[in-house]
Image (cartoon, rainbow, N blue to C red; front, side, top):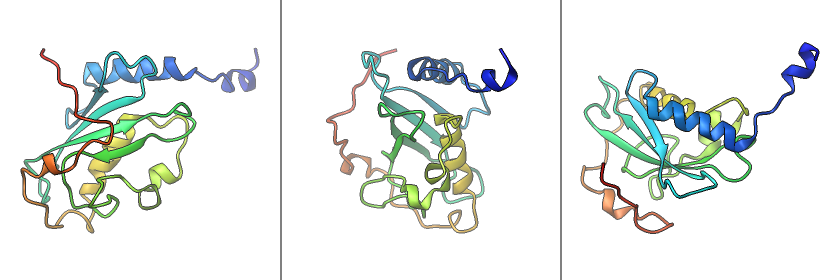
Length: 159
């Protein structure tokens, strides 16, 4: 096989998602972002949760931000939808729904197949540190219940 042919090998969606799950479970990285499956029974591996620890020296410092990521059947060819469960004031996030607006978050607009959910979370954390976001006043804590999940209540598990 030539190197041009090897470069065209496409990892199937479920293998790709299994790789991401394994990486998320191992906690690779600096520990300030994490992610995993939302529902272990989801055979299509569509529903994921993510966590970002607010970066220091910003108005997000000391806060834990919960997100939902939904990988449709076109993932990784198309980006997942990303929604903050935790209320947040950030330029690329719809303040009512918590949805990260692709038109305001270039990584989603210019999505590439090799990007991962971890990449999205790391980039969102970096976005929190930008000059136009770092000092934005944040909603009072404890408002998370007001943002209902359109798919129903979150499933909880005991570890």
